[in-house]
Image 1 (cartoon, one colour):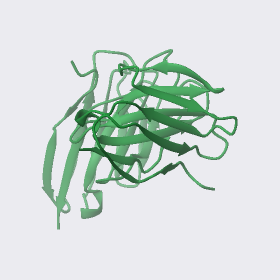
Image 2 (image 1 turned 180 degrees about the vertical axis):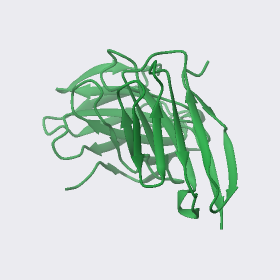
Image 3 (image 1 turned 60 degrees about the vertical axis):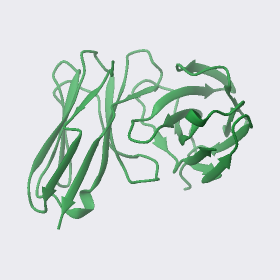
Image 4 (image 1 turned 135 degrees about the vertical axis):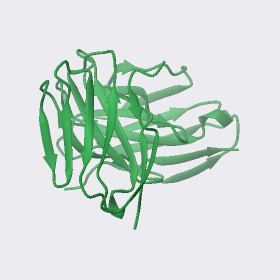
Length: 112
Length: 113
């Protein structure tokens, strides 16, 4: 059983479209991080959310942490081909000393 | 300011052999964690080192072992390699605190044939 479920697993959209993807769990996390990973490379940290209900924006990306700190969403406005990649969410369970539990990731393809 | 660096970037080994992977953490970081990422999967936690000791361990067999040096760099050793050990091995560095951010290296692609 996967602790963090990400959906959808695959997404292919046209440049300029908006999209929202999700990261859900039945467990509470002390923090949650989103990463983007290119093929053959390590994950690159996009954002860390800590407080329930917190919203953070990174240019065209908007991240939200659920009120109960069990889930998160990522919204991309006007997607561009450069947004293509694997989006991973990872949570830290309280007391786990920065050990990250990852979801399987969402493969996003943005067509020009 | 150098980020997390890993070596080598690619490695091919034969079943039964042993391998050592290396990681230098981001400047100022004192904690190193290792992850295994199989194709099409998210990274899986192997173990974490702080103050030269293993602090936490994931669900990996004893064939996986590690070490942290006084300069905070770290090694991951895998003995008696199996075909299923083929994966991208990622090192992440962080500061010892709750809710801290982890920064990843580019990974070592290990192929076992």
